[in-house]
Image (cartoon, rainbow, N blue to C red; front, side):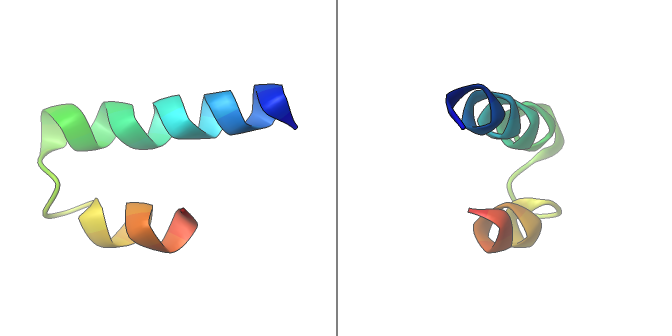
Length: 32
């Protein structure tokens, strides 16, 4: 569970950081 959470967090933060929190922002809130 720890490894899965770390990978999911990094994958959700990587695309949002360099893409803008407006396009993938809705998806990230839903996943978290």
